[in-house]
Length: 110
Image 1: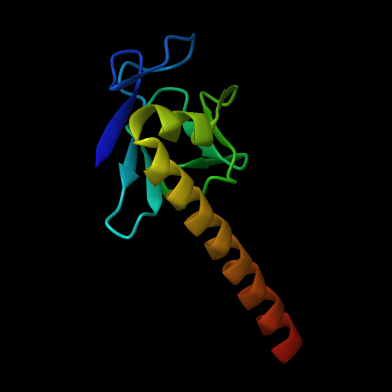
Image 2: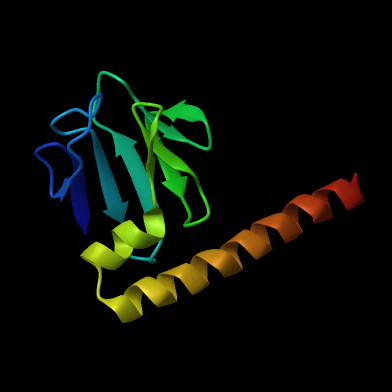
């Protein structure tokens, strides 16, 4: 599944600095998400870094044009059935724990 975020997108955000088709949110078959900037003038940011394309979790901070915060949980609730959004959130939380475990494991090994 894919959704265009922007002034004229599937997910409408009509704010200064947001392009007509600003970014694309992609739900992959494994339930994870990717966000892709669509050559917007003012950029798409994840955790403060301007991106072209990036895998994201519900805990990531996503901004359009560097100033417009996107609440991923609310956004997903608006486009997905409620039960799917809850399952995806749980999956992403588990993935965050697993990723943190792997980071600490590497530090311990080195």
